[in-house]
Length: 571
Ligand code: ATP
Ligand code: MG
Image 1 (cartoon, protein in one colour):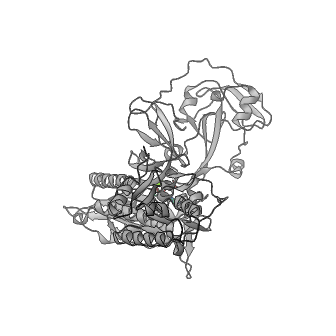
Image 2: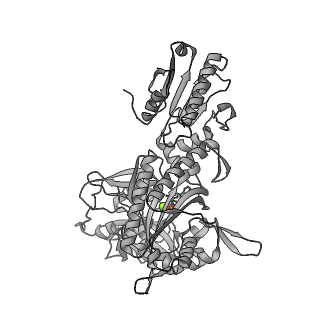
Image 3: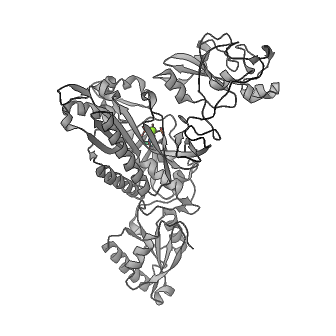
């Protein structure tokens, strides 16, 4: 590609709306442009990398026996009504209506469409197992689209679905996918970790998220420092034993706490210990208010509460919900409570807590579970770093991650609702066991940039770079330089490399800056001095290694350099 012809509009300034490095660099390096909130155009530089990721995914999916197909984006409401998700998916489901007034949605995922296909086409055990995948746009009307391609409303996903006769078969498919994902993210040059993940009401540890480790990641991971336990904090267990406190119970007192609506307000007003205060959280579970009490210094685990309640719709109560439930915001407590109450195990085992008195400007102190109030006890708080590993007794550490993929055992959830059965050897109808497996292609690209950049720009892993090599003649006015550059460009193209020839009438400094911003792994500079010595100058983007190679038959030397392109350091 000749730079002069290339459509790669770069920006010198960091765009104000971009908060994280990958978003900034994708805009600055001209990989994409925004069309509307969470909706982007992929420009050639970005699209080339997207296609590289697609290719890696395809190769590994095909290798594991999955077959590619393509479903429509637009899906009829009837399929979603059949699975029961039309009503529960909520506002994220992008609903559209045709001219006849029929309801459709833009697919956020494809379980309904594929299960309906399979239930029509697959009748016998002889047709199983099956693994089918597609790479296609998905639509989710996210509440907060942000970080560019990381959380957008239209995004490219590889989604794969497996159909097996039984749980053993599903286990095999699941592991095939798990291993394929491991190879995919390794080939993308990512530092990642598979972690145990929530799988809703289905139970068991049969979902893993593939997390790219990055400070900007929206997910929090806990991992053990001595065994390989790693889990999304949403489901991370703790081996720390919470023993019942031996402290004597004090007498309940009602105290005036004017305008103390938050835990911090109360604790500083009463000069009390935050660990001895109760935080009240109110959620609407299938339309019914539920109160959850956890220690003031803890964070609620919404997922564990939702799974415990088995609630289909679940959200934090609004001010209106609180008023309707007769609750006094800021002063909610469990004593005398008529609504359903969940109590975190630390509160059930502890003593003498401070909590809201269900009356404006008042709190109770010395409140104790079992004596002063009751409720359903469970671990409703998040596990924190520093707690004991549930498997080996090691210590849990914290990291942040970007979820680039997820593998999930669905079991018979959709085969049941959509009627996907097969006849076994005895001619008996059996439900198929399903799995689903997703990778966000744009999010993977963003995650790769998040992990591979410096103050000058992107540092593409060789496998994802839109072009591997950029040739920079120092001056386009020098005939010898131009001739040498053209010759090298032609030779490299003929040898099958992806090459940019920077043939612009720009200063060398500008060209070098752009090459760094675009993150091209190998730069070959052609200048008069080195040419006179029969040499080409090179620089590896990642390690900064620079030097010269012979201008005579340089292809072997260039191949050697590319083999070192991903090496981190240069001695
Ligand atoms: P999240 O929890 O981040 O919203 P999810 O668990 O809902 O994601 P899945 O349904 O598991 O996502 O989708 C599979 C993959 O699709 C995710 O692992 C992620 O890489 C990608 N993905 C999901 N939502 C988005 C989005 N809004 N923008 C970009 N990629 C996304
Ligand atoms: Mg997920």
